[in-house]
Image 1: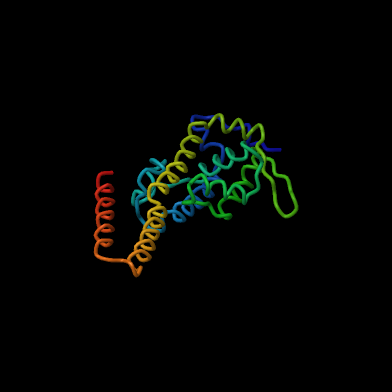
Image 2: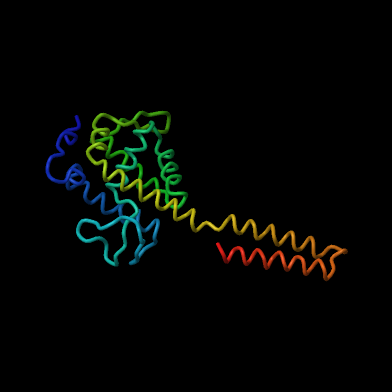
Length: 212
């Protein structure tokens, strides 16, 4: 029996569900999540996390996902469809635009925990386990809808940041330009007139980029 499932009263449903035993778990894995993304030591990741209970970590760093957030993201994903642990890790990585993927050491203990409290069913499939949402898990998502939305928004923000800072298309275009210049200007028919035409094209491209 999962007695903890029905005991979610009080003013803070998001934190009361786990009890004292889970508090240590949350802190331990929350630190791992933060350092996996932002590295060890003091620092600040603008735009992610928001203020934590107790004033946040020393140095002002905000977590991408704390352990409670990770629980909700996992519940959200298995509510969409049953998934294996590895599939959940890859799904979170995809949601973050490839910026962040929780380690198995974070995900599997959390999955075990939500199964233990009755929010997920686990079904053995060979050496793997398939996790599916339960009625208790669905109720938890509904009760903590704002927190779910916030956690998912953080992953979406990471993906958008990655898209904005990904210079791969520019690097590809620069390689193409280099190849075209080398091929055309090293041709035996290359002359001063051709060089001036190429220079004019490059000057026009630079001007257009400046006006963007």
